[in-house]
Image 1: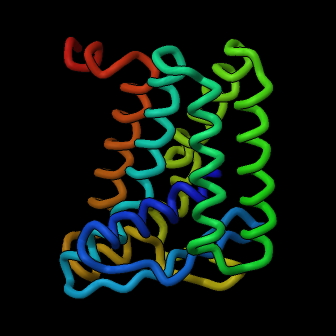
Image 2: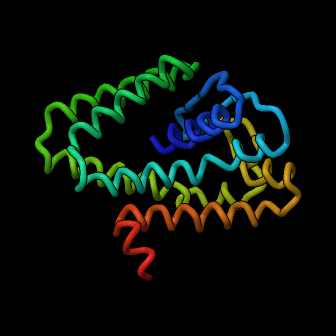
Length: 195
């Protein structure tokens, strides 16, 4: 789910800056790849920058809404979005099966679980997704990672090449942003501002 949210964040930003998504791939090793088409260095950098903060934003949002919304409806909505992305963008076998299954499970959980159970699922999903940036530090600050078993430069390296600042600058900025978004989801944004 963290990989899916990371790759979807790349795709959504590509659309927002006037590009499009060709396909998403999610692999059994937990890696993923978003194939997008955008024009221009700054737009490409925006797309490459979206993965980690976008994942943290989703995680923080799930944590934030768990007590302020109908938790079953949130699970149904998340499952429906997963299923929609499978139909629209996911183009590899593992990704289709894994995400379609997860989407169906989330929809079923939203329909069947009592509110307390749905809130617990949202809390676990939000924390797991939101902590993705922290658990991916090695790849975030490293030169290369592996996507589908093949070497591939990290998002931070891609942005560094496009915008000239060192990769660790971008990695650190995304990490700080991710921690802030996760904290806001846990305690509420109004509490963060008081600190």
